[in-house]
Length: 185
Image 1 (spheres, helix red, strand yellow):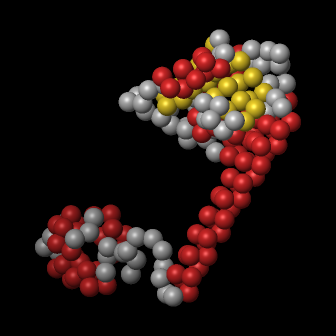
Image 2 (image 1 turned 90 degrees about the vertical axis):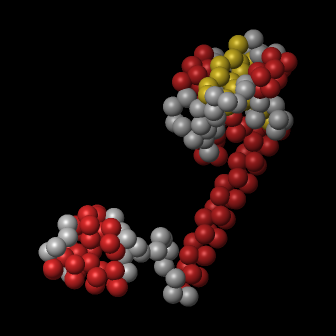
């Protein structure tokens, strides 16, 4: 059996690593790395160092899976990479330990359920958008340039008394919106 190697992460500098580090030490981790970075960031230098340090037979220990992966797909890929190298993963809060057959099963069931949930959310969102379109609603932000504003802007532009910035201010839109709509005759 190899070493237990810990990894901890907090999202902001205001958050503390104490809880995670205490749990890693209590589990028997002799060495650990920690990052202060959003979970969605691709680059987490201390995680890269921890993964580089791991050798066959070692186990990477995290307090919770969300401290490790950016997404379910990232977690699955990472566990696959670790398995290829003969390295296990243990998540303390979820009670997952991929060095055991039961732990591997639980991890893959969690992964499948999370992927299923993600796909259901996407499906519901698409159905909601389609239903809204069928009722005549188009998505996105409401247009700031109304036909009445455009008509007023064209009148002011034809007079030639005001600059584009001044016309935009009068009709209540940005200069770039005004220019874009004036150009689309």
